Image (cartoon, rainbow, N blue to C red; front, side, top):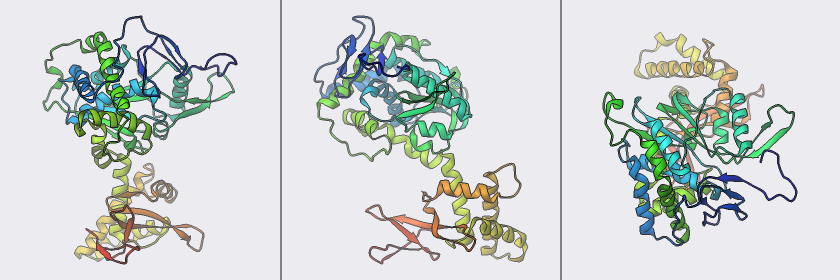
Length: 453
């Protein structure tokens, strides 16, 4: 695949070592080259079990229970966390049939020894019948781009796994590739640029992970919590789980494909679920199939609220920044340099107004000063250019009932004018802006709605 297209030679998208789902919803299970899906099926003859041609919903529900068998002892925080783990296996099996990106999967725990790394390995082995090596993590986007491009060119890495990460995870590249259909870059050792389809699935694991660089909305998190001081001291039915799952691999593949095939045979009925933007094809093929087969407890997106509201570092930074700004000057338009001057002036005159409102303004100025400095930590004072870049990245985003807006007009020097406004959402999804007094005005009908501030 790295050589490009050869005239007269059939196109090959991937070499499979286990059956997968075709774009048609059928199962690619015959050995040899499958022309319809451009896949080469190559595994020992007789290794895999046949999938029923027209499995029923009851059979799909039973198949979900089979997939849960090897992981029944893991301390999932909720049924939705278990669904994320199973969704990793199903996503690998369905990948040829998903015409679009697949979310990043993150197995997360509160302390070491809980089993997050083992769970990742087990769900990958269930689909592939083999383990994949863990890759080194780097915060250097250039290095990571080279690695990702190499994986895409080789076409031999259905899963890219990063093991035992810590802290805040997320770079602009990782956020980009999570929703990309291709990756571009220069081939190693050449001057030739390449634009290669991206078909791999990324899985990470670590303790107390948070997500930055817009990665939070692109991640499905499975949380484990053993609720004990030394999780590694727990006893399990087996201490060779990955090896046993490798033996069960044909049964687990049959179960996974039964879920996916049954949903396709039923006409892929839409479930009553909120859309998962950027992952529409995966959403319909995998998520809806799981909920159709097992009910809402099997929705792998059930953990997304937990991530977007509590574990998205970018969101938390914006909440602190926008709330302090609004508490300081409400929705008053200002330039970044003027905002910095207001912060300095408020802090310089902190002792002159000891009223509750004055103290609240000083506290807001201190919080906003800290948030600005955090955008460029090596400076002791807010850097106007760094703050401006941050606002550009946040423009239009709504968090905690507030939105950062860049106004159409500029000041006399041609500098952008900004403000933070309180917003609500009407029943039809339109934003309702609020003024300083907290009354939100819906331009459609003129009725004011009191803001909960």
